[in-house]
Length: 125
Image 1 (cartoon, rainbow, N blue to C red):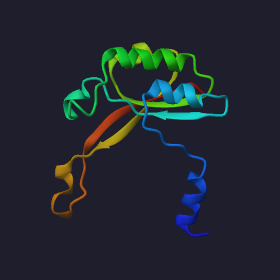
Image 2 (cartoon, rainbow, N blue to C red):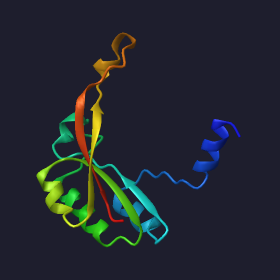
Image 3 (cartoon, rainbow, N blue to C red):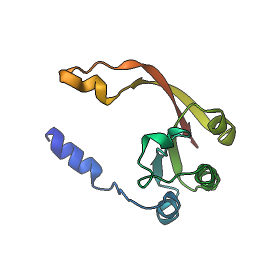
């Protein structure tokens, strides 16, 4: 099998939705479901058009409460923030170093990245 066929086979059972996270989780939550969640980072609202993203602190709390009752598994990525650590205390948390990319890194064909940043991966398994 070539690489494209392998990717196609792997993605056959993957479902991508564009709905409020609560509706997606309620629709698909089961013991055999794995959710990967990458919400807007706290304080990151300024990087998005106001009409495109309207994720407030209440939404971060709503997501946390929903994940605490989840039947399935989840992986949640956030930046390292005191609110996040407090809200998800008790879950498995892994700190990962990630390159900080920006559009300016790719000018004139260069692919150099800025210094390493940190991201939290939070899991319930």
